[in-house]
Amino acid sequence: ENMDVWEKIMARWVDLKTILYFDCDQDELVKRLLNRGLSSGRSDDNEVTIKQRLKVFNDHSKPVIDHYSKIGKVCRIDANRPVEKITDEVESHLSDIGIYPKVVNKAKPKAFLVLGNSGSGKGTQSKKIA
Image 1 (tube, one colour):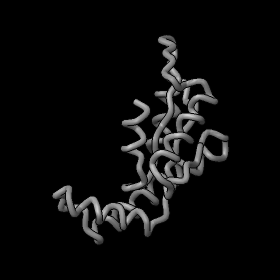
Image 2 (cartoon, rainbow, N blue to C red):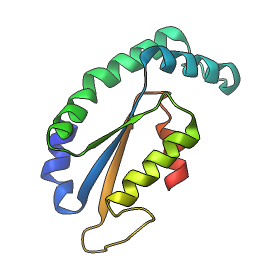
Image 3 (cartoon, rainbow, N blue to C red):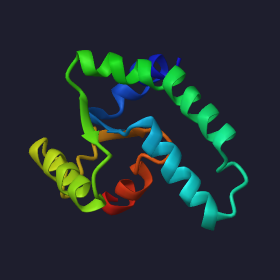
Image 4 (tube, one colour):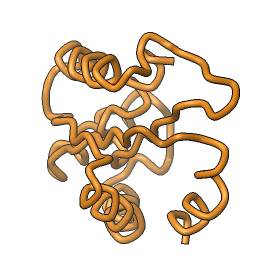
């Protein structure tokens, strides 16, 4: 449903260049989120809730990733690595497609989506490239 809305409405306003998909092993995601829960005070950083969030992501976001992969729009980032290595790959990819450093075209700005499961590092990387 979200993908249909994007393609019907947003595509006329932005030029979607890529989707950054931070792909991370499920066991690593659970480990990271449980570790985050030790200091975050978030009640939802528990194993039962984490596994449910991972399932929701797989059920709802994976089809979007699969669709855009088929048309060459997904850059799959191995999120099992150190933050610095991931940042280098993200910046390199965005530079290769002409949207990093930031370039603004007011008529139809270039855009990219950031997808990844909870704990994959998408928030960390989004802050670094914003």
